[in-house]
Amino acid sequence: MSSNLSKKCQTENIRTYIISMPPKIQSFVVRKDGFYTICINEALCPEARMKAYRHEVDHITRGDFESDTPTGLLEIRAHRNDRREI
Image (cartoon, rainbow, N blue to C red; front, side):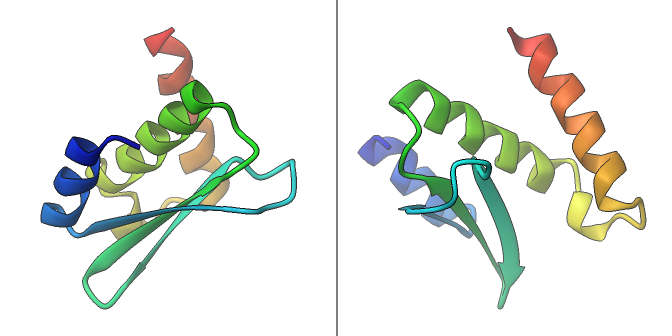
């Protein structure tokens, strides 16, 4: 992640970590204590890391954490939006 991206994350109460995860998991986000923490699989190439980061930020900006919609449906919607960006 670039230093500009890192600075932007801190100002938006988003912390980002690149960590070891099982191959099936690309990324996830959790909310706690006023911060969103995005974890990205270290096995991903740089382009896939950015795509995963944008995917998780989209969940935050869409208000998915405040939604009563089941997580599975939120993911289906998010992945449809991801495909539209390609």
